[in-house]
Length: 253
Ligand SMILES: [Fe+2]
Image (cartoon, rainbow, N blue to C red; front, side):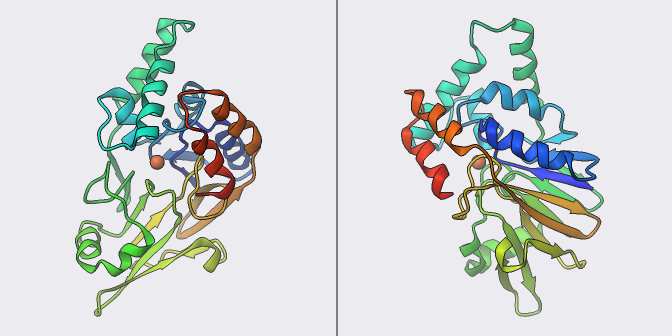
């Protein structure tokens, strides 16, 4: 069984709760689909924990921390610069700092295994493209993306978990939210995109941390409660992190 986590966004309480839950399952390996940092208060701790994952992809916020951030709104950009300062923090050994920078710099943008593609954004643009539930009505976009997927593609980036399917020959697309499918989906050989949701900043109206278990053909969406008040307080206490970045956690938006 594989656990798929994504979009941790420096939320240590969310990540620890998810890792605890993973430990209770018979999980052999953890894959992370990117965005370890950005928005949240614990970038260093989250990178250190994610280093144990067998696969970890580059997310757009991880890239933003390393290079000049591009395409971020002002609060996200401020959070990126604050994150960079944390990674350069003078109180830490240079060995630790270098190990984290090296880890970020070595992250691949895609990973493929047994006809399954793993990306942060989309098969077409692994780092930056969003595939939102409402994109099922954008047939041109979905046609292009589905054409690039051999069978199954696991992705993150939108922070909205769920399953995208196509019905042929009409080329219609469907989106299945986790609560509509009792949090379980069986892969059936048809092309499918699976968004694994976000550990550290869910945006589907459910505040609980989200991740996915992949067991053979079965996908399970897990929602995990965590100490959200601690995370929000940390964000409120850091001037460079906009209060809104904490407040939105409560609503899962
Ligand atoms: Fe993200």
